[in-house]
Structures are given as C-alpha cells and as structure tokens.
Length: 212
Image (cartoon, rainbow, N blue to C red; front, side, top):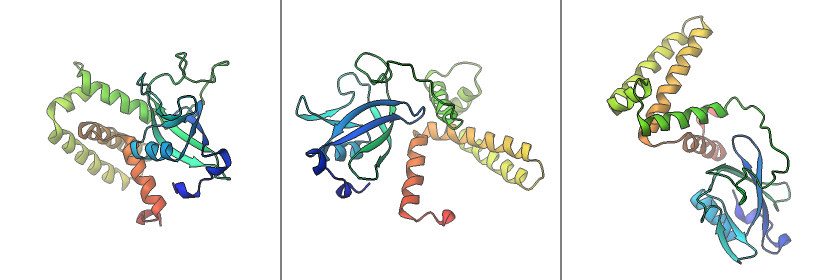
C-alpha cells in the first residue's frame, strides 16, 4: 500500500477504517487511523487505531489480548477510507460480542476456502495436544524428516496421477499432498497467511513468472 496516496487531510489527519473478518466477511468494527497508526499496523500486521478519546495510538487488544491480525488492507476509490480484512483473536466488541454491530446476529455465507483455515487450526491443535490414535500426532511424533518424506511421496503420487485419466483419483492425491504440506508448514511454524501474503506480494510486484 502506498500511504502517500491516502488523503489524510480530508478527515483532519484521520481515516475511517472498517474492520472485516477475513473468514466470514462480517463487519467487526469501525475505528480511525492517522498516518503513524497505519504505519504501525502495516509494520506489526496487527490493527492499531488512533484513539480520539485517549489522544494516542491504541492497538486493538492491548488490554484484552483480543487482537486483530491483519490479512489485507485496501483503500476506497477516493483514498480516504480503509477496509481491513483481519483475523480476530477473540471478541472484537468490549461487550464480549463478536462484532460491535450485534443488534442482529450475523449469519456468515459459506466460504469453501475457509475450511483450509479450520484445517490449519485443527493441525495446530493436534501438534499442541498430541492426542492418541491420531495420524497427525503420529507424523509430529516422527518429526520433520518423516513429514517431509510424506510430502515428497505425495508429490510424486500426484504427478503420476496427473498423467492418468481419472480426475477423481487426481483430486484425491492433491488433497493428500495439501494435507501433508500443511502438516509440514505447522512443523516449521509457517502459516497459510504467510504463504498467501508472499504470493500476493509477488503478484503485486509483477514478478510472478508463472502468472505472467
């Protein structure tokens, strides 16, 4: 994001920032950012506002630890309003509600890709708790060499299946590869968010050779 293109002057140094859940697209809250607040938000990847009542920078969750982890930020067509997609680390509203707009309950639309986030959370939970009789626990107990080996095996099987005629079998192999890759990512402490951010950064810079 090019901060210099934003019109802070229109709002006496402040831009309204709409916070939206990156998974459900529910609007969580509205806050205001000055330039330092936005710079801190971009640097720490965690939403920081300018508090008009406290007259200082205020990181959402600094007391409650219900932080808002930034996924994406974009400005509107006039460059005077921000829309921030974020992952909430707890209720956003001080009342304990998910959203500050809670007069009517929000029913999220189904997003098939949000399942990947749920799967990522489940894999992380398996890594922390290591429940018995779990294949994922077995992989974590065996360590990175075994996990990496499984990723390699599933990658080879995916390539082999790609040369056959069964799309159903191919989809199955891709699913196996993706699962084991996510286990490897969890073992290495790498999130889907980081990978998506890297892809977007490459795409925005125009250096994604396979997308050219």
